[in-house]
Length: 400
Image (cartoon, rainbow, N blue to C red; front, side):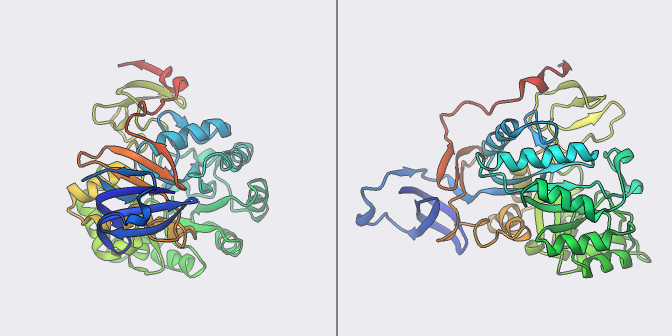
């Protein structure tokens, strides 16, 4: 057993001054006030005024700290998990971009194998390859292809059933059939990189699409005569709208609109981070192109075009609380609980409550992660060294 004591515990029922009791990987009790005499012999960590929050869950991330999702083995994915834990992420879906069949096959196998040693890896997310060339974003459209029942079944089999989510463009021929098939197999389906109209998007939602892939980005926007995919996703209560909250991909005012329309219960903050997230400023030659990471940590091409997301979930949480003035309880709902619910894990994860997995983070007033606990195991402490950056990625730095 382990006790965590704090004046600010952000639990499911509100803010508590008291303690969290953890046993066998689960939260046994959240108590208010002093620790009872009956628990006096239990090891405790008293964090004082530091805030205890539910561990953050990232539904959509391609890498960080130089650790990529694709083209690596289980060990490297474990390093990514450790890196993210240092920034308060206790659960995530490694996300594969649209790739050739053999790359996706290797990726889902690596994720499957990594899950045994890295409990924060909750399954795989395939962002493609069934996407619209009109909304390719930073994707390589040459590997886009028609939705295929045979391919998704093959990948699910290779993954050992660990694919939790697939993003596709629902207007593509055959996409609705594949979407319904995935839903029947327990896989969450997101609409994204899509040029679908409002009506096409509504049909897709009727067919089982339940997540809007990085809302606003790479989708047909809102027009007063054609509300587009954005209008359909924002106004349909069946849909969870994930959003990048770095204040670069989506303007703060647009985030306010989304929150006002969809409400905190239908919005999930994601990072959509690429491996360059967290890397030192400088020029890098990555994936066949030159990328500059500026002093603010943003990644851009030489012409100023955004080259992927480079902020993590902790940045999104801070932007919600300090930038938009969202209450802590509501902000944490969007960084943890809505995501857990979207992939069928809401009964186990996403909030601090008795019976749930002991996934929690201790956060200081200056936004430093002091402790990270995953399944009751402390994986990050204040005395631990800085999270490890991938040396191979650092070697790609041209200058700084």
